[in-house]
Length: 180
Image (tube, rainbow, N blue to C red; front, top):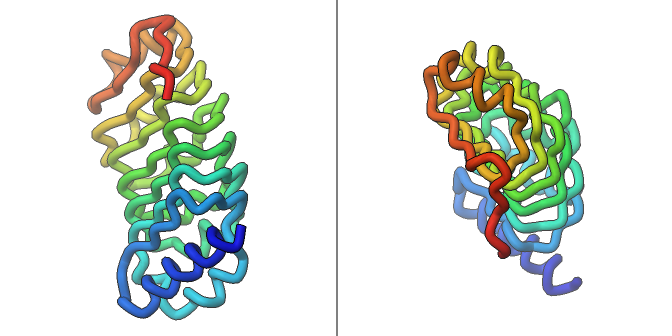
């Protein structure tokens, strides 16, 4: 535990001291975003454009996280235990890419459809059955949505292709993800 805390502190300090636009807290055994980080980063939050929280044990993100880091361009949350996003994800007006693969989403996070700059959504290996195809089709910047290894219903598979102008990656019906 102490080693993980020290690793987080080191990575946060590196971001502050270097003036980096990236905060990488991947594989730090986090179960939540540490509250103390907000204070340490308060003078640099506007310049952080990429946050990686991949392969932790996160079950949720708070509204404070979304509103604090509203200048994000990319958010990498793959390999956690997330099943929903806070409504405040809609404050991420500059977000271009979000990776939510290998989480526990059963419902498509519809708040993402309100983000005007969003180009790439990765929801591979979740449990999503239904997708708001019409809302996705109306997204101005969307280029790619990855829904591989989700149990998508037949309606989505049939209706989506003629309505969308972006790439929608789907696995064959009934396909399972390879073991890790």
